[in-house]
Image 1: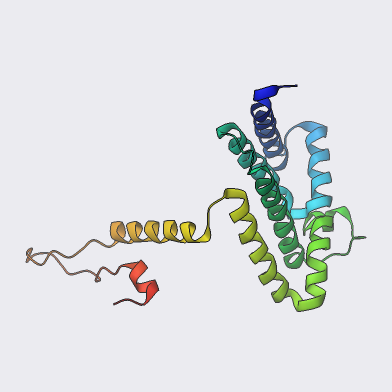
Image 2 (image 1 turned 135 degrees about the vertical axis):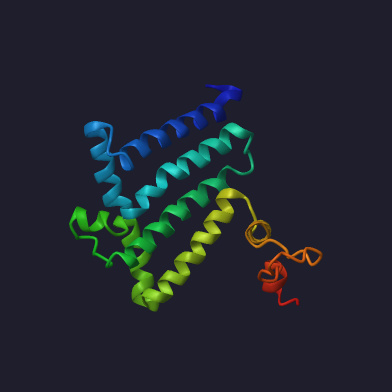
Length: 196
């Protein structure tokens, strides 16, 4: 129907949904529709509902930025796994209510999705084990959603940490006799790698 503008239409729709969702979930706005959205997503996703506007915005930006012919499935799976993992973690941290719990209890934990994702793991490998698995799923989901490998992300974090370290801890100039020595500057990347 929209031909070559289909991705633009979907991108704008997702960005609009993100803004409206943020107004409803974060700003307690949009009147009865916002209240219905808060309660509905609260029962379904619990605390994971707060990830939905961010995910919609990210997906909308990805669509508007360029063609994703091969990446649509990867981005969609990443988004679904992100919401599921966050809801599962919220279920484990939120007291693990049952599916029959009140809407308020479900909204304060992981909702129905959180119960479905977190409860079997918690019963099988305990709360700590479930948390480890769900954090791993969340990392996988973020890799899929963003398309950034863990190696690239770690390199970016290391580079940012190195730049921050150098900005906070200035190097001591040995030629300036009046200067007071400060802590020795250490390269955090080399330190993390065990290099002296």
